[in-house]
Image (cartoon, rainbow over all chains, first blue to last red; front, side, top):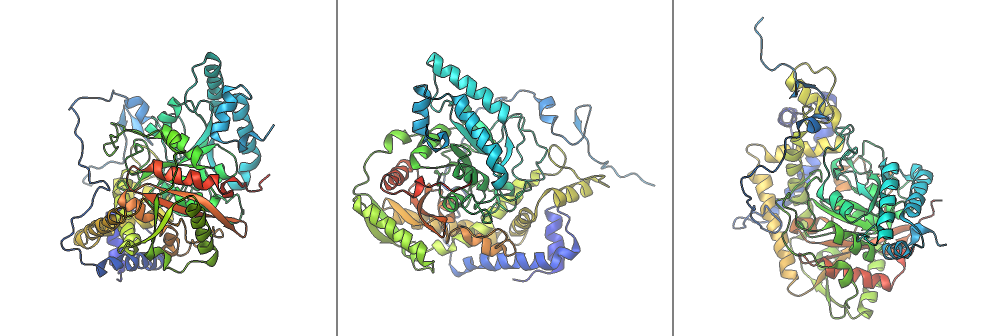
Length: 98
Length: 486
């Protein structure tokens, strides 16, 4: 399994993590060694095996569609990096024409 | 008087009940030890001195008024992955290095409800990703047995603090061995119960189909006390099991004669250091004397465990950790140019190397065109491993192996090779994949460093593994030794 720089750029973008280009060679080596480890799975035929997504094969329990949480905005927003009028602030997302 | 920190939980409860000492005295003796010794091992991220003394005083009041709770006045520590209202809950990460939790996890609440005193929050590998506690933003934790050695991870702070006698016991979490491996490396008893036994509500998520809370203690008996408090159905966690919790403490004394222990051929045909094999063989003799039958078992797909884990865990981690975007809580980068820059740089600067590595692998495994080859394939292989255990439990009650491939290793020895580090969990990962409970028990020492053996049982049979571990400890002394730290 070999990864190209282009693949790394794509993965990093999908994960929304900025990565310095000078870290690419070592990162590439590490990710490839993990993929090599993982490739061992290819040695078994799993065609008729049912995938296991929950260790005890339980299904999702349902509850009544009722509001259980109270409005706790002030408390919850105490950890926010930037707040204005009870809203989370982020850089402007609407593009303005020059 | 004996040193208070060396008493078992049972003895402490008796001492408190008989007014031999108060919870305030007990708590203050621990706080004093933390102040004096923790700078040598770095096991705590936060020490809650005032809060601890306050709740100790409340415990003492309850003893006086005759309304004591099950673990009243027992000083413990929580891994910094369990949200604790009004307290920094960092998960060992820069990303959450400013996060004061607005609520408490069910585990924290269960311990509060049992009267235990929380001494502080313990250090850990960042977001529970690591086997050596070297990935923490708050610095590496050192093994109390040898201070230039690792304590194991990811619950390395919990392991180091209990091992050093800085808490009666500590909570931990185990996704691939993060309770059992550090317990082995620090000479402790560490139990990961059945998936769903302990609520994950407020336990910061890493890989949701594998994560499970548990405890690290000096003995199986101590573990029984703590696990009893911690377990139970929680409607706030949809994967929490709605089943009765046995009285682990009461059941621990039942005899183990006639139980059948399986040795997986696949594990024992691997190259292991002579002293590891020897410690296991001597432990088997102890069990045989107690009337336990030893049988070979076959787990044909077990060697797929590590590859399966390194798809499923990173995939689930990449999804879980997408919430850290610098918007609602946690770290945010300086002067973001635009929203994308805010996301990209916040995550670059807020996460450490190992966490980023796993997010990237997980993102790749889940990306278009690769899902079937990686995630789906891993889920299918996971079923094969779980079936192997199901088959084995038809002929044995428990499966025994070493907990870790070796004793602890020197700080820095494995940091440059991630796959080498991942191999630390080769014996512990299978239980997480199958959801099974597992325990690590001290079973020897080599050059002053502890060794551990692991027992895994079928689902919901924690009582059985605690009982086995307890009887082993009634007949061995490994769990009674303490590192020299003072």
